Image (cartoon, rainbow, N blue to C red; front, side, top):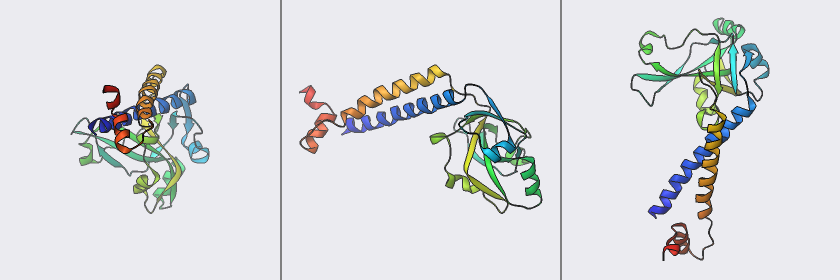
Amino acid sequence: MRIVLNKIFFLCVFVYLLWLGVSGLIVNFSSWELEEFQMEEIESNGVGFSKYIKIKNSYPTGEYVWLQNEDSETRIDLIYPIVSIEKYEDILYGEKVIVNAFVRLNNVKNSCLLDSTCIPNDIDIKGVIKSGFDSFSYDEMKVFETDNIQLAEDFILIENGTKPRELYINIILFLVGSIFGGAILKSFFKKSSSFKDWIDNVTEKKELT
């Protein structure tokens, strides 16, 4: 049974590598170059299939959520909403707005929590749009909803300061994940007459006897 559990573990690892490769290739082929958008454009029309973008003239609403950085006890990762100048002014006047974009900023000193200086004043954001395992669901992001903020169903999350992985790295991840993951997955579908026979097939005991 331990061999079966080990196979399941490594299958999960290779499936994750496969996902990294596929998601990376999608970014490579959907955004050969950095594409620029005004914040107003994103609020009106979205970003289409673009994955590597620069957002110009965006303004943070002031809210943010912080996550403990996995590599350092003194660093945190921030997620905060951004809007156009028009919507920012609407918020100041107490009106409700729909938020279409969020920024993830990694490796920030946690001392900023003491003096409320975590969110930078940059109005231009550049990075890769996150998706899948790297992003958050609609329900998870609803934590940002307030009397003045409503979450758009098709929101984007951009990780500021990041660039797409190199094409050859994504190809390697895809090949490793698909070849080794496929080989492990195939071992689970060997024809068996009973559960014990299936265990013997998966653990390859029959080949060893």
